[in-house]
Structures are given as C-alpha cells and as structure tokens.
Image (cartoon, rainbow, N blue to C red; front, side, top):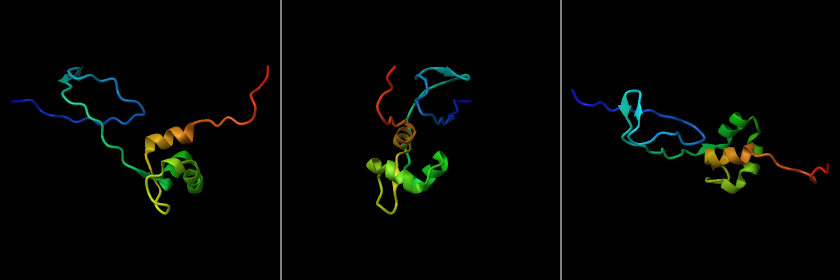
Length: 94
C-alpha cells in the first residue's frame, strides 16, 4: 500500500521537543522545518495586546520592517518587547 505523508502545524513561543526518527502517533518523524515568520501590522498587534496603534508604533520603532505609513513587525520580537516589564524609579530598600 505504501507510506502516506501527513503534515502537522504547531504554533508556539518555543520550539517543540520533537526529534527526527521519533515515533509519534504510530508514525516516524522524517522532516522538521520552521516556517518563515510573516510580518504583522501595528493594527493586528493592537488587537492582540489591547494597546493603541500609536503606542505599538512608539514602543516598536526599533524593529519596524516597513515604511512610516505601513509599519510591519516580526511577531516574535514584538511579543518580547511588548510584554517585558519596565522598571521605574530607584530600587526598594529593605
């Protein structure tokens, strides 16, 4: 009958713990490849992080891949910059 080929798509912040030759669900893993990241707009990020488009553009100006009118960002880099906590003021003295 022959071997059939199946494709599984996984989206995550970290790479999955899958090895070549590993048996998963009765099949052997033959190939692993990372899909190239699509760039996203400031409006798309504004919906996800509940921020205004202007705030997104101000915070991510260093990783802008588009023009001034059409701001495009790598979603992985944008996530790290938008979720990090900014420390303000002097440290607390105990």
